[in-house]
Length: 203
Picture: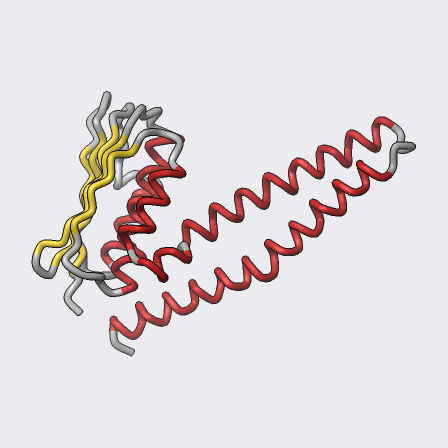
């Protein structure tokens, strides 16, 4: 199996996992949340301690659904496949709980596996900026230069991110490396943090 065939096989397996999560696990969680909500609404005679346990389980089920939605969307949002990287990143920026300046300049749609890796890098970088770096704002620049897709994500957070420390950045570097791309992190203590990726995108 060639490298390209291997990447395509992994991509196909990822899509299968997405379908299973959406059509199986997600639907079961929704059903569970609905049933717990009905139990609270239709059984006013429940003891207060039982009602509290059910209410807590109902809340946890709804939180699990939200987390699963984020996971599926992070794997490969439907809009990425349907409308491309620009539209998918616009949606991602709108959902990110900090201001994101987004600039995308593409000559044409790149290969699906390149779009997927670029989206994943940007999604993870924005998640890190929000959850770990205490950033107040971020900037995402994506541009196609010849046969290379260049991605840069910058945030004004605390800095100190280390791609060699076995964190999620290591996974990003591996994803970029799977396409023979280049990955770099600049994150001095005190910030800012800049994550760059260069992905070959010749079809």
